[in-house]
Image (cartoon, rainbow, N blue to C red; front, side, top):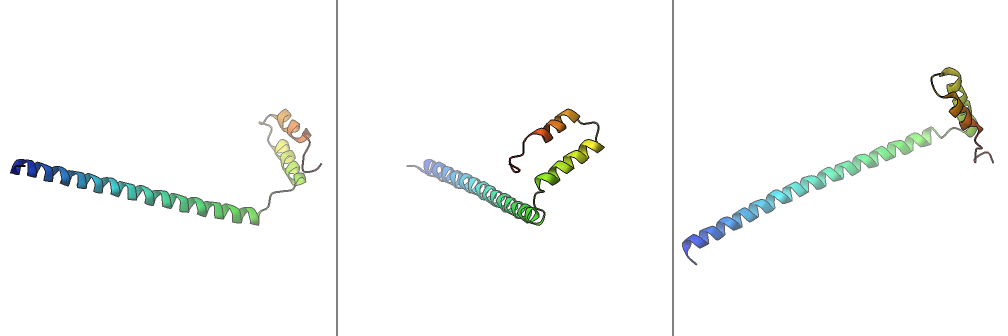
Amino acid sequence: MGPGETLSLAAVLVAVIAITGIVAGAYRSRLAFRQRELELKIELARVELETARAHPDPSPLEHRVRVLERIATDRARDLASQIDELAKPDPLLN
């Protein structure tokens, strides 16, 4: 192997090492981004859980009263579909 071939091989090795470093850096950045994304999702779920615990779901009766209030105050909506919603049997009451 002559000096030209040795120099070419060294250049290729340097290029491979450089490309590997760039790809590894991009991968590390992607992992850091994904970790931060998951941390934020966990925080959001924690806040939603605390909110749900602080404000439990209304009872079926409260829900029906709220629907009736919307019907009485908002005439722009389809009144028939809202009345049909109230007419459906509630599995929680049965």
